[in-house]
Structure formats: structure tokens, C-alpha cells
Length: 182
Image (cartoon, rainbow, N blue to C red; front, side, top):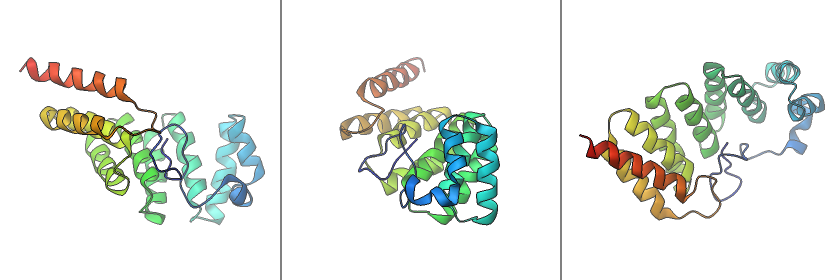
């Protein structure tokens, strides 16, 4: 998912800014961190639930629980946790980006657009936000706008993002062929 800890939005390696696993291990509990690392999701969920019950303002706990919900394709639970974290840290582009990705996976292009616009506003170099925004606009029937967004994003030439030129070129080709068929 997305990381604001670097200067770019990297959808594969992120956690919210303002905390580290070491500094928050008391809040999350070493057991929960170990369970996450070992992919023992049920155990991690129990530990994270306890943590959030005692510290509902623990953004990293909400973030990790949202990741687990998303991996289980429990989209609404993941969205609820990301949105709770966003209320606590509204200026964090990674939270908006991650929530937008889950909204996309849940089939909600309107929520995807809302979160990707916010992620892009907070971090204009977040290539992933541009990519998902273009996908969501296309899903809403706004293909010409999606094509413009994808072309503009390709011009950014970010250097540390996981979504690169080949993905954008593929998206642009798909959008252009959609427009050609009209």
C-alpha cells in the first residue's frame, strides 16, 4: 500500500507516517506483530482488536487491521478501519490512497475517486493515486477525463513508485481503444 514516509506514494510498502513498528510495538503488542509477520491473521486480529479497544486512536493498529481485512476481502471492514484512521490523521496521503484502493476492490468507483483525489492533493507525486483515479473515472463512464488523467500522470515521471510507465501506457492504450469504439 501507500507510504507517505518517502517522498513518493508507493502502493506496495507503506504504513502511515508518524510511527514506526518499533515505537508502537507496545501498542500493537509483540504478539500481534509476530502474528502479522507469520500471516496468522486470526491471532493478529484478536491482538489488534484488543489494542484498538484500549487505544482507539492507534492509527497503526487500525492500518494493520485494515490490511488484514483487505487480505480477507472483507472490503467494508477494511474501509471502516481506514476511514477511522483518516479521521485521526486526515493529512496522511497513504491512508486516503489505501482506502481508495480498497474501495476500488469493493467496486465503489465514487469512493475511489474521493480518496484518490485527496491522496493526490496531499501528494501530487503519488503515481498510484493518478492511476486509480483514471481507472475509477473510466468506470464512471468518464473515459476522456480518465485518458487525460493517465497521460498527465505519465508526464510526472516519478522515480520511486511501483506503478510505472508500462502500466500507464497499457491503461492509456485501453482508454484510447474504448474511445475509438464510440
